Length: 208
Image (cartoon, rainbow, N blue to C red):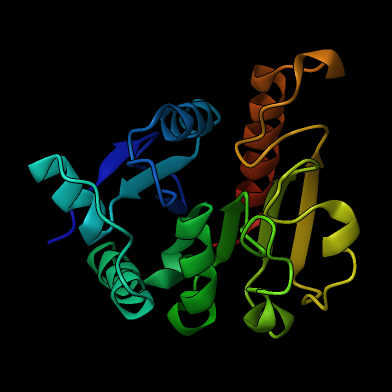
């Protein structure tokens, strides 16, 4: 059985399900800030961990992420346990959001939220992870930092992405939306913008 962390009102019409990134657990500071901020905006949030992260929590031993088939099945199991995709918006941080995007249409999710989508590995822009995004039917919101080494605006603007995808760029943000001090912006401001934009997106979706 998938174990979840829940935030926000039980009576919310939709639940936003978030999976973590490759290196941090479901209760990392980033995930805690996002979940808490969204809960404060009236969004119900559920978080879960992939098998490799659960093993890390249990044993303390770090290992690489599970294979894509295992990660995708973990998403399917989480969605089934929460009653099916038609009452859910799915997504997550980096890896978690990418895998969610691969099964969003199949799961008939109401929406998709990716927090720092990894369009390609840093320094390897030829290794794109966008083919399935060209045919995506699920309404999607991608929140990206303009300095993200996994995909900068000038690169992403050249990709053939589905019209179902909206992208919100956070000025001077890195992969976790943190700006440089000299930018005049703060991590808190960028995270606040991300939370507000996700809340707006989720509230605009109609439950099935």
